[in-house]
Length: 179
Ligand SMILES: [Fe+2]
Image (cartoon, rainbow, N blue to C red; front, side, top):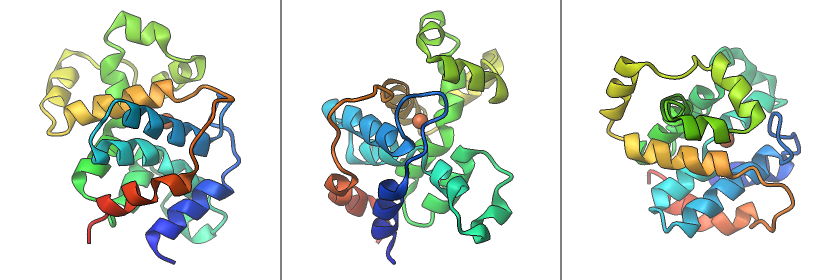
């Protein structure tokens, strides 16, 4: 099976809720990608938003073969799989989307608007970045894109809105693939 078909199948098979939210992981990622589209983001940012939590699908995969390498975090697991198929401009913001949250939480307003579940997971993710971590993070080549994906991640948790299908993103996925 090629990777586009695998991604489509994984989205369509997913029915687990996004931890602490009222949307499934697939719905959440589609919503994030739709927000990126609404902002006329580059195709790579739309693709990164669409796949940013793909690691959760791999963790949930009933195929035990993949379970061997599951000691990492969802952003790393997704990154490791996706980087075989997608360029850095897609996979780096995915790898960094949790760090981006730790960075953005330095702003009180951002922190206060996070969902309850996201506030809980922040602690497990290392808490708010300190000054030197934040400075280092801001020098990352994909800093801006990581913050963008993060914002769509945070906002893409609204239940019962009209969503596109994963199939509607076939061209976005395919145009971002490494040939
Ligand atoms: Fe997410």
